[in-house]
Image 1 (cartoon, one colour):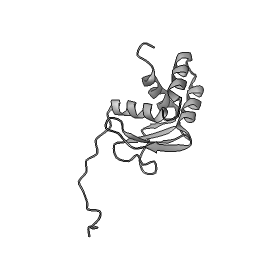
Image 2 (cartoon, helix red, strand yellow):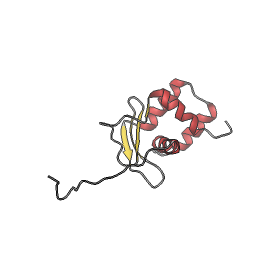
Image 3 (cartoon, rainbow, N blue to C red):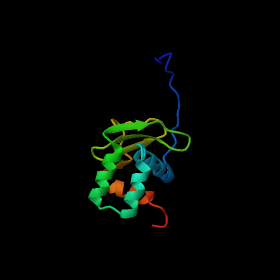
Image 4 (cartoon, one colour):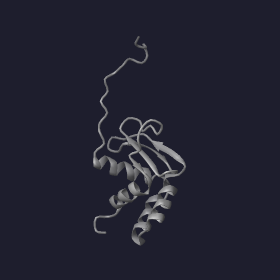
Length: 118
């Protein structure tokens, strides 16, 4: 029986494009005060894989997230395991596979963050 306050709806959730993933990664890793300054400094000097993993863990924090906007998907982050979930609806860290996980995905996404001339 259908619940009167929760009617079943045929809702189609937009798929994440590569650009959506890039924007979501940037938003998730730049949510703390002065994070953009820290990333610019890191990009200028370069980082080893271990330094990148440490930087991502620092910027992700223990656990958090934010809702989507018109042009950036919502995210849930977890510093342990360097995990980022992105979604246009709700990024559920308990049931969904992370969009980015670990230093390997973080390293690939870090490349996207660098200015085009580097």
